[in-house]
Length: 193
Image (cartoon, rainbow, N blue to C red; front, side):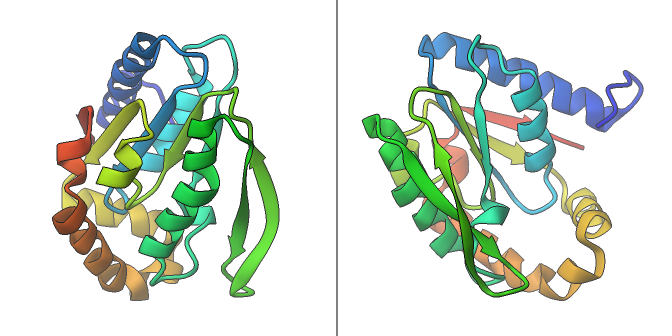
């Protein structure tokens, strides 16, 4: 991601990271949990990666992307449930969490990864911010972006793989927004052009 001052996207992401870093420091814990939610193409992944690179605490953080957990194109709710049960809940109780990567080509779960409860944690993905997950997170971020920009970024990123599923995935996002009120549960709302 470019950090040029004349790039509106880079400026917005850098400003968002600065706000999130301030919120992380304010938690005054060595292992804060940050959730980053927003619709497809909003900039969640770029934001989470930039935050990971600029993590404001002395101990490194862990980043889990829900794209690695969703069980296919209809799996938003199932992926979030797995993230809660296997990552967020154990982390909040001080236990090591273990989650499996979903192999989209094979259509099944593959290798496992561990999450250290003594370290900070960033979980990013559509659907991750809900009343249930908000209770176990310290900093909760909603990324807002206009649909034309989101769609362009998502299709530039995933091209023909995502194009036939855009509407199908968007229906799950709308259901999540109506049901879970992620904006209402966010401690920070950031805008990305």
